[in-house]
Length: 397
Image 1 (cartoon, rainbow, N blue to C red):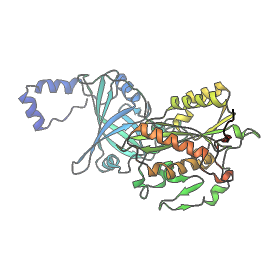
Image 2 (cartoon, rainbow, N blue to C red; image 1 turned 180 degrees about the horizontal axis):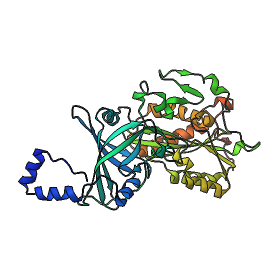
Image 3 (cartoon, rainbow, N blue to C red; image 1 turned 135 degrees about the vertical axis):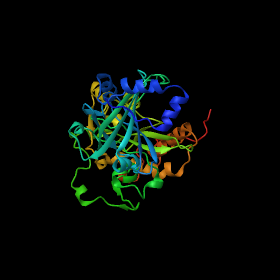
Image 4 (cartoon, rainbow, N blue to C red; image 1 turned 180 degrees about the vertical axis):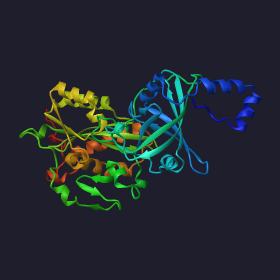
């Protein structure tokens, strides 16, 4: 049985508050080095944990690690593994693990008010059999436990999960969303970390030096859009989204719905968060007004590929036409629209509130549909306003 090493300052404090005997008994009966059934349940059902590391000089780092339920795997009586997902590129915790191998993990179950400390040594490995099905893992950390210390529930506030992060990778994802980096970082972000609005403007590729160049030759061999049955292309709205921020720094997103045949922007929904419920709600309004299309094309964002969305689309009689992961040119109309919207509107406006953004963006959508010329339509707008001239002659009685 592993017992903690009490330093002299720890002993002095125990003596000051008369807890030395209590500390020795807790160390004897509570600390252990192999996972119990209760420990396993807490770890394997966790969707997050806190991790402490330090470098060789003792400089600490405390980080939060989150993921889908079950992203931490117990692989032995005193061993667990977990993935490192793409972060902010600093690699502070990972660097400390390589340098000192000492880490402390804190698991908390707020719903059931439980918590547990796991002190251990760790190493970064190339891969692990237990994490073969894990999506988007950059590195794998293997942890060898030195002691496990369940804590009491005192001061663990009871809380419930409301919604998972939009950026949480899951086994069902066909594509993992990138962090919403601001344009001020686009000259230093590597390509694999760039969000879509930095990498693609319509059918062009945004290179790291921000100049626009034509698609690389090996891209031209690929189909621009998934092939649909003949005669049904005009009934295929496209779904896309574009991130932005209000003046207070808070992010908002737009759900852009286009008719790929007429190029008309059917709707733009502006929200702080867009999930599968928002997608269904927006499509419901359009289906009532315009009827149910044959196909709906979109990328592989979690709000588009959610099971609820797929089931609802099937129930109303439409079908999905998801693009290939990592192939935004297959959703070219939406990608092109997102680029034009950013260049012509978002980059030139300061939105002081979400409501202001909703009003201005809706006004721009109407201008885009009714007045802005479109080169692919012979420089006519997608849905020009129909004006019936009135006879100006006076009415004679």
